[in-house]
Image (cartoon, rainbow, N blue to C red):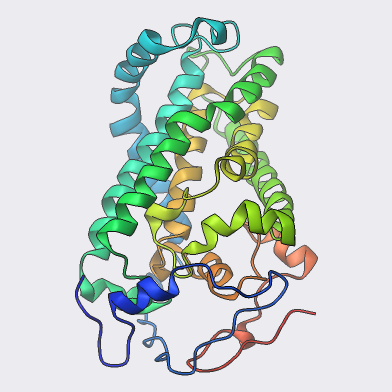
Length: 331
């Protein structure tokens, strides 16, 4: 990758700082005095992330309409050929097409947004000035391939440990709405709101628990190897964390609401698009809040504003990092 401007970290520096640091889990990492302050944030509502939710919603719709739906048939046939007979009573790819479409939507969103869009942006040095941590977010080819390999392994191999139990809950409650049932916008918007609250509560509780010393050391430290994360690292996690903390909260919403199949597929694409953009580092994509968690460690545990504001773990604006300063510890 190209070198940054004078004073910014080079790719070699990034490799040194991207490894987990040996500070105790209950302590805040100190800011390096020799690190150059981040570049001034580009002005404008778009660059500041004011339209991040609209961007997420639009990209998720694109992923479902133009990638997931055309790809779903191919994925179904592939799963039918290799699906273990012992699992067919719990999830049959030939019969449970809603579950397959949900998984296909999540996979397509990760491939389009994290592996595709954001990785292409990261290759252009000019785009780094739109990142919250600037050139600190540069990654090497080895880091990129490792993150993508772990992410695809989690989605393709380990996600079933969470999706199959959730699908059982969804199916026993009557399954999702019928495919031929007309979409009711007010009803699906209400279901979507339930999904948003569910994932925020679920993710906050599990994420906060993963920062306990023992769980952090053995499980969550793997994800925090990226102090300045990139989109491809959004599902770079221990499989236990991925299944319980990440997938569990996402698939629980549709299992509870039993929304329309198209709405369930859209929610999975929205969730993976949102976490990809939140880890991208780009302000325009709304990455500033979760990026601050990776940099400051003990703030911004949730995926929304509900739980962090309710429990006082939002990183205060006055304590945002500046070059060479050490942030105040949360009491």
